[in-house]
Each structure stands twice: as structure tokens, then as C-alpha cells.
Amino acid sequence: MLDSHFIKDLPFVMPICNVQKSLYYPQDTTEMTSTQFDCQYCTASLLGKKYVLKDDNLYCISCYDRIFSNYCEQCKEPIESDSKDLCYKNRHWHEGCFRCNKCHHSLVEKPFVAKDERLLCTDCYSNECSSKCFHCKRTIMPGSRKMEFKGNYWHETCFVCEHCRQPIGTKPLISKESGNYCVPCFEKEFAHYCNFCKKVITSGGITFRDQIWHKECFLCSGCRKELYEEAFMSKDDFPFCLDCYNHLYAKKCAACTKPITGLRGAKFICFQDRQWHSECFNCGKCSVSLVGEGFLTQNMEILCRKCGSGADTDM
Image (cartoon, rainbow, N blue to C red; front, side, top):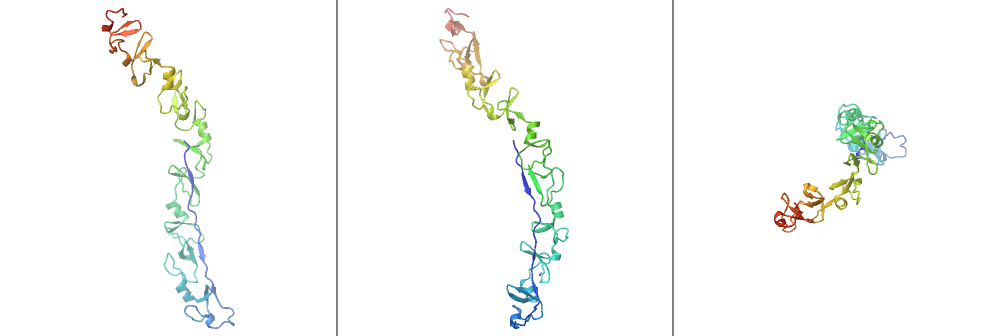
């Protein structure tokens, strides 16, 4: 049977963005009134001072930091306008606080993985969370592709055919105790061929007279119906369903003329090239059973001793 397997892409490095805040010094304010150059919130004059422009409104640094600053996920302090604000999924960090949750090394401009709300560098993630390759036992690094099959994981380059050593990828495979095989190698090394259609038997099959058939190819030699999970008889090494065998080859009961199959331990009586079902072997006159009893013959008729006495009979 062709086994099912697939590729998984591991969690990769997460993008981080730097929240931009533009600080300005006024260069030319000769055409602006003092009220036009006041802080939008506290109304203090911004002439000659640093300020922040947000949504076309001016804010002094103190008011901007108090009103608009994001709070750092790590230290819980505001990220003020003169600091870099690193953002990931609506969470914010100071540049100095943006570190691996486990080893505490900086993650600035480095790859990282988010795991259960924690940020981990790739080394810590690999040691803590990554799968180990079933073949080489090494860590399957984040961002790489891994093969999953029967609850185990492989590097894509380690998931190879046991015979030809070529990567299997997502191609069909057949698994044995000795390893996984691509279909061509399995057919070459292990496969049996159906005695009827001559094609490979990948699973199951029926053995008869040291020959193997697909289940769907094991047919009655008479009517051609499938014999899988059916009782059958054979004649000259050919299989037959019971109906065909009985019709073509079974001996007929001298009394009822029905086939004598011999199935399920059925007994029959044979005498002078004639056969009877045991339940049909009765006296031709009084119908008493003659199984295990002495009997006489008169012409072609079988008689018990009582009915046959005095008649012109043969013993």
C-alpha cells in the first residue's frame, strides 16, 4: 500500500518594524504667529525647541511622550520619542529590551521565532521546540522544510529511498521494516507479481497453489466472479466457485441427483460407481436409513434386509 507523507514548513523568522517618529526643529517661522507654533496639548511655545509633528498637529516632546508613547513589553516603561520603538504584532519594545526570552541576547536585526507569546532566537527555539530528524538525530532548524511520516520527522535531504538513496520528497513511497522505498525500487527488490494480470501486488493478495493474485484478480475459472472471501473448489489447479464446480465436476447423488459437494465434512456413500448423500442412502421400499447397516440390491435398487428378504436379491 502506498503510504501517506507530507512536507511541513517550520515557523520562520518574524518581521519586525521600527516605529518612525519625526522630530523637527523650526527653520523658518517668520510667517507663523506664536499661537500657530504652540504645542497642541499644553499650548507652550515651540519656538526654538524640538517638537513632534503628528497628524498635522505640533506637540512638545513632553506632551507627545505622555500622550502617544507605546509601552515596552519587557520593562513596561514608555518608549519615548528619542528612542527606537520596535514593533511586532502590535507589541512594542525598546531597542535594548528586544531580546530572546531565554538566553537574553539581542534580537535586533536578527531572525527570531514567536512561540506562545515568547520571542526566541533561532538557537533557543531549535533546542527547546524543534523536531529532531529521525535519520540523523539532528535538529530540524526553523525556516527549513521537514518531512512528516508515521509520527516521525526528517530533514528533506534525509528522507530518502533505502535502496537508491534518492530523496523521496512527496512522491509515492512504500514502507517496510527495513526502511522506506520509492515505488520503482520496491517493485525491483520486493514486489510479487499477480499470476493473472502480471502487475505488481503492493499489499494483500491471495496465495493459491504457490501463486499470488490480486484479490480482484482471483476469479472463478467458470463464471469469472471474484472468489475473495468466498468458498471455492479447485480442478486441475484451476479455482472454481461452488456453483460452477458442482455443475461441472461434482458427483451426483443416485437418489436426489443433486451434487455431492463434500463441504463442511459432509459424508457420502459410494457403492458400485454410484454415490449417495448419507441422508439419501435409504431403503428403496421402506425408506429406512441404510447408513452403517447391511443392505441388499435388487436390480438397481438398494433394499434393507427386511424388504429384500425373499426377493431375488444380491448381497
